[in-house]
Image (tube, rainbow, N blue to C red; front, side, top):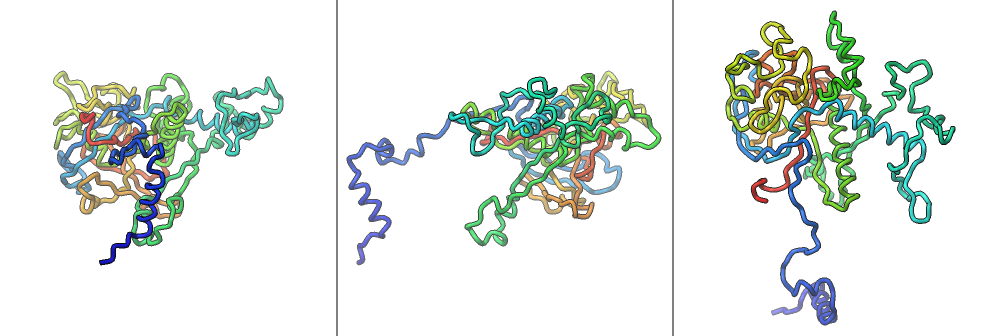
Length: 432
């Protein structure tokens, strides 16, 4: 019998013999399988403004008559992993934080305001020095105003007291095509790096405020175009005029913004914020009530006192009857059993899911999702993304939990907004 040890094993044993009496980090393990002992401590974090949606099972599909006879949503039993979800739609003021962050970051770059090392020199990789105040008026340095001209409106073009050119406010985000990276066909070479499956996109972040005008013919909505995103009266109203790419960029920024703070304070980073999948959205909207037509149950859109329970288009167009003519404050009406507001009505909401009429035929029953990153050159049919929940301008059929609809990913509407989700890392909140 050949009793020779493999070369690698022999070398390892020799190393242990030679250093057997040394006092090393590995010596503290006393030869036992303890797992790495220098791991950071992790405790579940409930992000501000979000609620925990526990794992569960539901029957997706129509809970009432299929008015359009579309058969877009046949019943199917699926299971969803727990996640966090914004308790309300993203507001104008929350989205404005994103817009202003992009504005300030561009200004810092134009002014070359970067962090310095101990020697007073710029770091090898430029890092914005956020502690430096932006001299917009050029009071401290006359050259600053000239440097910022690229970001400002041309003379005579400023309207409604806006001086920054919204077209210059652009944000670049990237993502990894995980399906391609995992594909055995595309990844036969195991030496490939994930960067080879990375893609990026640059989007203008300022909402399309003209959506209030171009969405309707022969209708006077100019005051909403002028004031809806900028006036403090609408700060707590849902942001609209944001297309699917902008909503995705917001989630990327939100992840980056929080993780930047956590790294700065030596805390463990969190997983990505993102748009909910269509199935996650429906599961959250039902609030634990299976096979019901509305987030509050049903079968009616009024409570026992005759009051409407959501912001939609009652009857044949009595818009103000439910308490809101256009959109309303995101915390209007009662939340569902998960604590989520306006999962029916107010604004329809973007999901991450690509729209296919027969999706129910081939989706998986575990965290189902269909994703397709359509290019600008793709035909319009491939740019459809699922929107859910119905809006202030829709009849009650579209605010049902089982009703599906879609919009083109590069289209911004005055009745479409969004909210974010973040995966829960672990089995269940009760495990901790």
